[in-house]
Image (cartoon, rainbow, N blue to C red):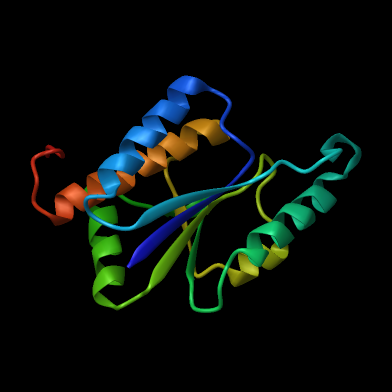
Amino acid sequence: MKILLLTIGNTDKNYIKEGIDDYVRRLSFYIPFETRVIPDLKNRSTLSLELQKEKEGQLILNLVQTADYVILLDERGTEFTSAGFSKWIEKRMIAGIRQIVFVIGGPYGFSKLVYQRADFKISLSQLTYSHQMVRLIFVEQVYRAMTIIKNEPYHHE
């Protein structure tokens, strides 16, 4: 199984980039993991929120294949413990899913079409994080899940 993380907009904080890069490097020992950044929309300040979500949504959907299992990181999604998330990922690995695409949307969320295409929604917390911080937190949680699946001592209960 492969994991693709789609995000809207670049990460401009070096400390966040470095953290993401570190966990992506660590993940390469466990699973093929790739991140793709969809550039911020040009002239987005002139667009309504709905039009912005629609345009971002189309860019997201252009990168999703028919067979992909699409997961939105969304405040209304299912919350997991780290151990529960690792079991959830492991079930998808066993089920033979070829690629899971996790999507972190723009600042205003997802378009209706993206919600319709999604197979599942996950919430990382009831707290609100910046979109840049969510990337780092999410990549660390995928790494943590892989170490739990492999019974390695990174996660402590």
